[in-house]
Amino acid sequence: MALHIKRIYEPKEDKDGTRILVDRLWPRGLSKREAAVDVWLKDIAPSPELRRWFGHDPAKWSEFQRRYREELKKNVSAVEDLERHIGKFTVTLLYATKDLHHNHAIVLQRFLGKD
Image 1 (cartoon, helix red, strand yellow):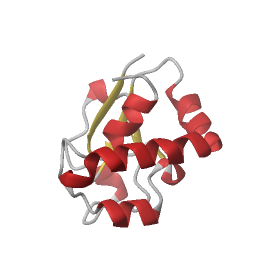
Image 2 (image 1 turned 180 degrees about the horizontal axis):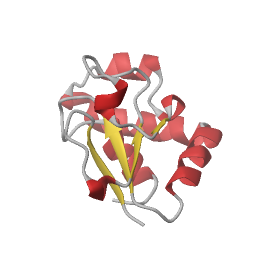
Image 3 (image 1 turned 90 degrees about the horizontal axis):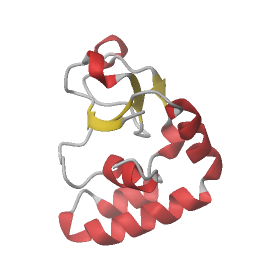
Image 4 (image 1 turned 60 degrees about the horizontal axis):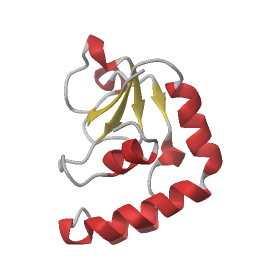
């Protein structure tokens, strides 16, 4: 089992396995066909309040990670749902943000212990 992360705007590849969108909002300018999403788990994404507070500001990255992990610890059902989808298969978590180094998919991958 492998757990990868990538921007949803990158082309689908065979090595992606099951493609799971982990954003609360649908990515702009992308049709469902183009996205090739197998599962959309909105509830695993950071809360709207946390997302707005972070605003993709790298200066807030450490605190964002801490706050998002706290949200994940309290969001047991969403985490269990994601773990069920992961199972023993290859999975790619998809996110829309342009920042490859400061995004919630990284935190989620580490939280699951799959980085």
